[in-house]
Length: 439
Ligand SMILES: [Zn+2]
Image (cartoon, rainbow, N blue to C red):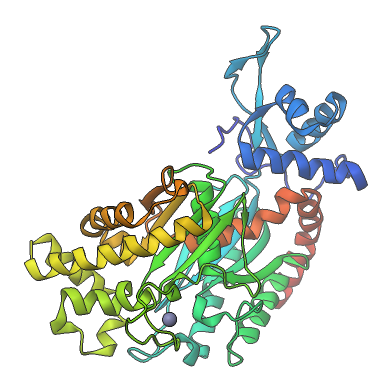
């Protein structure tokens, strides 16, 4: 994302903070204002920053100088000319020495990404776990916790080996494990997993590493907004097709959560008043006509009777295979499912007025055969002006949006308060000492 300057590949040595950059109070918050502005709008010249943030020229010059010295900002190549005709050199977020770790729990694997402050992917690890076939992961707490811990340990050690500072670790948790404001509801394993992660980060990195869990769908929306092809759409909805259908919302530039943290639980949007009973207790929920079970029933009825098959990711691959070879039953089924997808989208778009809707999961994998039918139904059922300018697209992040978003969330506090990472950089030395004595 940022054009890197030549020089040290890893930035300043965090073991030896210069002590030059120690802002407090207003200066500290202004540093966060500058980084936040660059994070949101991309590279800017000092002149632009003065005009757009309201900070004085002297403040911008001084703060940018300090942040460049700490390798939290970087001078870019000259790309345009200022009003005076003199070259204007933009600055952008740097921070290759700052890493955030995001770990996503999926059906059978814990997969982690480490990114730096610029958003570049620097490492990836995964560890499988194996609950009994078809068994829900909240009934296999020990295996899941071990896999998460293994991924976290590997990524933490790799970051320290690079001489980098870990700012935070965020776990992306499936929606069915979340309830109300609590990120993980299952008493059997949620608190235990978080305690293990706290201990791992403290042992390796010292205190001060931000450890949290959040709903996968919310984190996917964060990643799509930042990295998706629709650009920095201020209001964006992501919808993840699967056995459960869920969504995330970025509203006016910030992740929306809802009253109890379950915003955009769109699988239970009622689309058919006389429809089927849903497992949630409702009737005619969107999930009953576009969830994996409905897709398999419509496209591959020979596979639909086995609940274990329906939980396997391979079943959507099989639907796609049949569609690809022109299986008429599969194609007709996908046309029917696509129509239901479009009908649900019409209500979602009319409610939230998003700039873009990004489809992921089974909707992305089956997009070549679903999307045209979905858009036809969307156009036929949608009437309001909010619908005209909305982009509907499939995710380009290859199924990685939740863990990418988790890693972004893990470093977000550094953008808000760059001073916090310098405090962590000081404690990482202590953490290393503690870790080496305990390992
Ligand atoms: Zn329901």
